[in-house]
Length: 295
Image 1 (cartoon, rainbow, N blue to C red):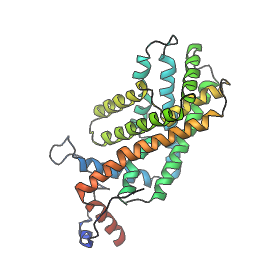
Image 2 (image 1 turned 180 degrees about the horizontal axis):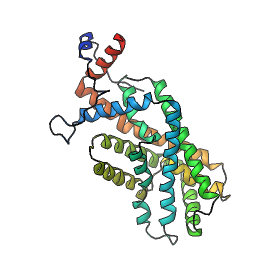
Image 3 (image 1 turned 45 degrees about the horizontal axis):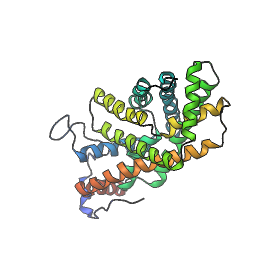
Image 4 (image 1 turned 60 degrees about the vertical axis):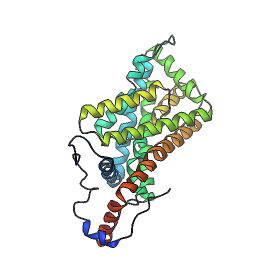
């Protein structure tokens, strides 16, 4: 993983009070409700730092909660998608509901973490090892939550007969897609989710955050893109009901995981970190490392 070139001027040690990573801007410097690009990036860094400092147990259970929350997205799709193959407009409009619960509830979702902690690693403010711990714990929690929700819906009478038919069809549609199709759609989905996180750090009002989440996550649903957690719910359901085999699940989940990670890291985290490195000149990162060395 590449990093941003940073200056080595030791005189920056004097600029370590009230560092932005611990006290990110609460309002824009020019307009209170409009953050500049560097200000958004500093808010991203502060958020990533908070995530990396959270205990492993809390990260895991927050990840489980996020996996369960996306069960509502799956439930909305299978409930409102018409059996006769008509336009699933309402189902796609409700696709963002699980993501909205995650954002407002501050749960941990793996694809959201392809931006905030990665930005810290790219600016050399955090280690790859700490990023790996965060990713591994959160992803495990997300998948556990997805399995729990799939099992609940598959082994209970929560779904109507028509919804069960749609759920099986969704799983078959996902697993039967060509590998190149799965990866391409997963890359775009990962890019969209990471872009959503970026925009959320540039918003100050709850209504604005709701609009951002709803608009971008709706695009994932209506464009039939693949997200690793919602996709896991979709392919697990027919397996748990006995309508499909386990053999296709690892391939699909692995490809979507790869695509989501590439989309979030490359198209958002790397590009935005590079732009910040140009605008900031590495001053923030150097001040933080200088302070850490002094402690």
